[in-house]
Image (tube, rainbow, N blue to C red; front, side):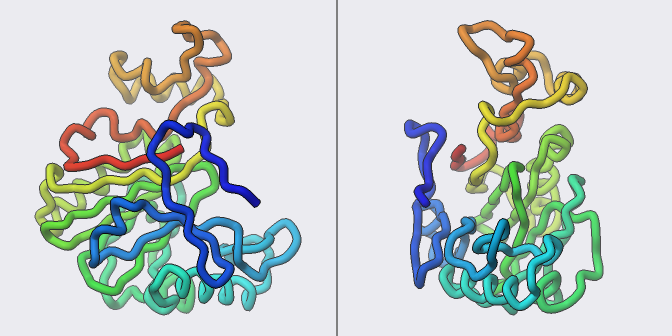
Length: 253
């Protein structure tokens, strides 16, 4: 299986392969010695059939032993341990949870004692924040000054609710993060050519974002917003309104 990029002109994540496991990383984040990060692919696991092969969900009918083995493989490849993972409980909210040492293993080895959590933040070394994606947008936030990190899931509801901003505000509140110090990365998500939404979603975005941003939010063709094109949103423009405060921005699609 070959990984293809929708836009070859944009910065790309690095394709890594270790022990048969394929995952993606940002070269810029790899320069930070205290950060271990990655985005899994479907390659290198043991799951079968439609779940082949790197299935990391316990709720899709897969054998639990397969899922645990997949976690063991992906964490080993990325240089962390399965026991250190802390898993979100995503329901398309803008809720952000502060993760501590006591949360290690929750959602993988132990039950989660929380729900409705789409963003995770921590400043504790060794704790691995873990979120899930189908076509939604992964938001990576790194504060190199306070050694704090954030990882959030932003679908169209989260984007409308400014999930990135909610995560940054939580990091500022808890760790003293200055947005100007942040390094922000946007991971793989569905491309605008493949993401068509209904008129009600467009109207929600028009209510949430100033008209000056509509051009960057909605798909344009031949400099005209046709009826079809207007139904396509580029969800990864989450950072439009406050991205100028970032030290660096990294994204792909």
